[in-house]
Length: 87
Image (cartoon, rainbow, N blue to C red; front, top):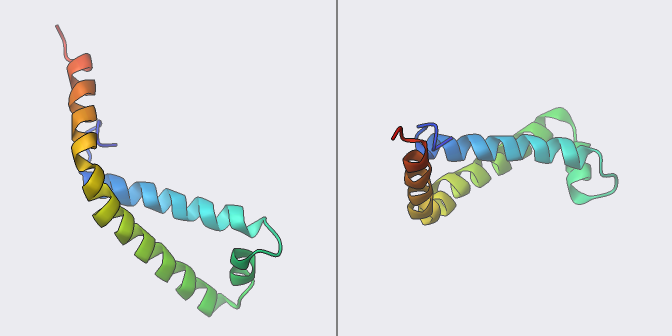
């Protein structure tokens, strides 16, 4: 997404959103795990708990992990742009 010109914060948030959605679906198919038990809770506590975890993980990923990787991302984006540039 960064190579396509998307802001690195939005690209990170999109990546974490996809991870969170996949996590919920994958874990709903794994019986007798902690996550499976959370997903069996009634609707209101389940949704509030899942959204809380998703927001915390998203902020952690977007703000901390992405900031640590920003230099690498920019270098890779510059390398790909140079390869795609017309000669």
